[in-house]
Image 1 (tube, rainbow, N blue to C red):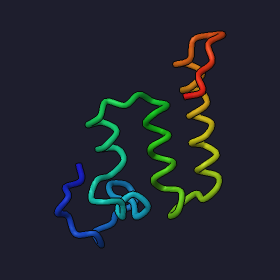
Image 2: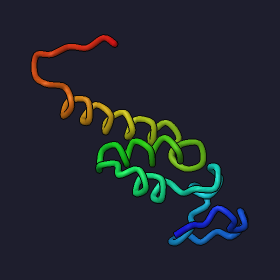
Image 3: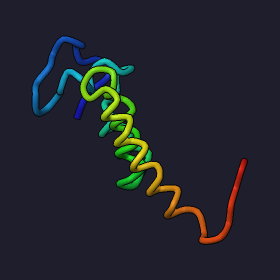
Image 4: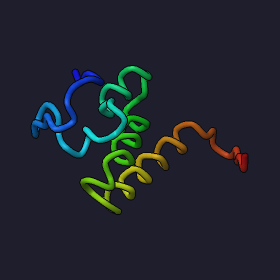
Amino acid sequence: MTMPDDPPGDYDPIERPRHYCNRGGIEPFDFIQSNGLGFAAGNIVKYVIRYEEKGGISDLEKARWYLQRLIDEEQPKGEDHDD
């Protein structure tokens, strides 16, 4: 588990990858777990947070894919919300 006071330069490719360590002192896994997010919502967070340092547009497209699945799950059939 990543602690907020860990030095920012203390990277490890498995335990503390660089593309997750520069985002306000909390890794996506810790944020996702502490907020009880499900699989789709957790992946949205993961891909959006890392896109600038790892996957670029591809990560944003992955986030969009998971977001559309989450919308499809949450939106009852035939009901349309423009809020």
